[in-house]
Amino acid sequence: MINKKHLFLVLFCILSGILFSQKYPTGNYEDPQQYLEQFRKVYIQAMQQEDPAILMAYYAENVRLMPEFQKTILGKEQVLLYHQAFFDRFDVKQYSRRITEVLDLGEQVAETGSFLITIIPGSTSEPQTVEGKYINIWEKNDRDLSLITETWNYNEALPFEEQLRFTSLPQVNIALQAHHPIDDPVSFELAALNRLMEATIKQHDAGIWSQFYADEGSFLYSRNPMYSGKTELEQFLVQHAAEIPIFEQLDIRNDRIDDLGDYVIEYASHIAIIRNGNFSGVFTGKDLRIWRREPNGSLKIFRHIAMYD
Image 1 (cartoon, rainbow, N blue to C red):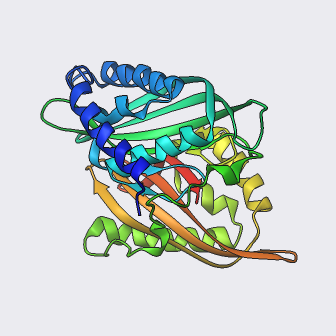
Image 2: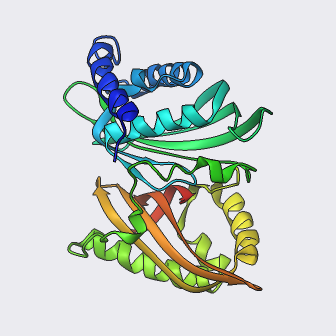
């Protein structure tokens, strides 16, 4: 149930969005780099002023927010409630953001970048400076771009990870929802790849794991920096495969597939039942994978970001 404070916020943001839409955004998707640079500046302003309303005009109505340590947030109003809840819990002292890559995928645009945030968690008076990385997916429309997916994670384990969960907000555990039907060649192909990925991870087989990625692929994994290129990915996956626990069960699924021709964007999630010594548990997480069709016809992961719930 949304309380009066949050209801007021939603109404305020809607009205503010109408006003700000006259100023933000401007430009068009024919020059996505310029458009995204404008968004970067507005995003920094929103974080430093703790004012999510000025982001309203950029979000699609059905935007999907996939934060680290938080179940998925669906819809513009719910996303703004999330941002406000974040500002209520954390005092943002400084924020910077850098775009590292813009990929034109045809009907959509993928933006990859990094950020640096200094915040004071609600449980302490000591400021914490945290590095992270993100992938945003933008959809082209008649005039400009709309942000349909926002994902991010952090480059190291954080002492306040539990505070990044906002359980009272409207949220969806995507891993427990219906998966995408296997009803066309691409969904069939991804289902087969995911079954192989399950077996590969359960067997801790870094050699096969690395073959899922394109030679120029990048993996933005949780609590790690970004790994790019064949050598970095192979080295990371060898280390990672040796460190992960025993998987009693692992179910990798997807709930959305955007087939863009040479690229396929997969919205994936997983349910993992694990044990490690005397510890055991059931965990869920979510992934955004951009697959690329290679010259030989195979699908390889080109860009990949993963977040725990």
